[in-house]
Length: 470
Ligand code: TYD
Ligand code: MG
Image (cartoon, rainbow, N blue to C red; front, side, top):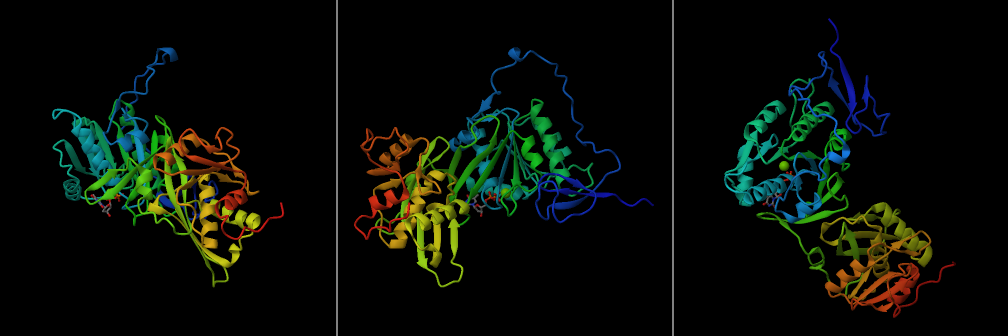
């Protein structure tokens, strides 16, 4: 009897190996190879792809626009996807379990239906993760019990596609891609080949005049989407829904987008009755700020085209451990470590003997280097136990030499600071356009060349910082 054949497929890059390996030779990830059965029949979709009869056409004769766009009516979502849902587009939305993906998409479906006439097409919510009853309970809580929100408890992708054709919905949600499967493939749901085939089948449907499709995907501990990267390549848009489960704020971030910008984010707050849009992020993130405390500095960061003020908090305390603790929340820890090293070398802070706790208030994550200066100032303030001026925002990227480097969109940042009634902005001198002193925006602008300048200008009342050797 022939041995049943199997192969091993990497969950990250879909590399195929005839035997198990601890580390994928293709992408270098550890422990990502999983066994899959090889079916005897050549792999074919149960949902036989309909090859379209498209003929080549002159490029100039093709329609110029991406396709019809439908506003979901949830502004933060519409902005992130580039101004509404494009017909036939496939969007993958990833995030930790419990972060609110199902909630967000139930609200999107409801909002979309509410903006179309009662006789309009329905939305189809396919659930393999929870029972249809659980979806009902959630929708009740959200006030989203729309007659036209059709819920289908199904995991067989062939059946799902049948129902898409039968109901001709305006929107399809698959919750989740990891629970759906194609019965013609002998591997378990969630494996690389299943995820890839299910994804490909839905992309086919969407591209052949189908509705926009949302795929929900889980994220692994390492923060990447479970399942192969190939799925990210197949879809038009990849969104991540992130946030700290213990905080109410959630960020919707576009990491790939064929129809819009990729650096745009949407902000939501999770409440008892679902997700609410946060239209004034600066006010939300600064609401609980304690003025007059040391170790707090306000950064003006840009998220997409939108400026946002956030509070960076630091606690620097004497360490009793042989290797002092570095706890970083909401910032890139490598970047934060670099800022600490620069402070140690250029300003002479003896951080090696201190535990450092760093946090961005509200549970948001800031990835922009322009917040370096705020991080540095929060550390210095906590280290010396001297509060910074409460009316100041800090803008600047820090280089390894301790120089404060120029940043983009400085005027938008200072305007936001002004709007939030901050009186003073400390900015890089290299941003030549920014005038020193009182700017046209009615905010005092102080230009600094180095971190040392910034410290000197801000903590003058205290014992001056140690001069460095450069
Ligand atoms: P859910 O959408 O189920 O997350 P996911 O699909 O990403 O796994 O949301 C889960 C959490 O959100 C759950 O812990 C409860 C909370 N929640 C609220 O706080 N308010 C609400 O109105 C809803 C529906 C959920
Ligand atoms: Mg869910």
